[in-house]
Amino acid sequence: MLTSQRKDYLLGILKSTGQIVAKSVSRELGLSEDTIRRDLRELASEGRLASAYTVARCRPRRRSATLRPGSSLPPQGKVAIGPGRQRG
View 1 (cartoon, rainbow, N blue to C red):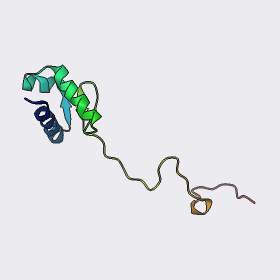
View 2: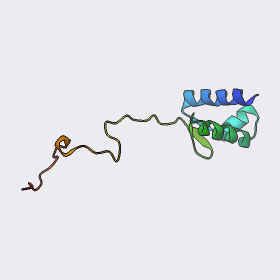
View 3: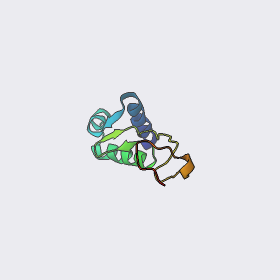
View 4: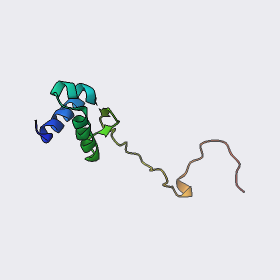
């Protein structure tokens, strides 16, 4: 089986089950765990999955947010959310 075929196969498993266990796939395909892990590392470096040492999972989708951490609003755009001292 070619590398590209293995990667497509791994992504197919990932889509159907949500995770890949290297040991199980290596037994199923009759390949070494190192071969599967290398393919998983390459897929992770391509941004196609998130991986741990022996288990790969789908990459979490980025949540869109109105404000990003570190961004700020001008004072007139801020709303008080609790009681506090009034500035005078």
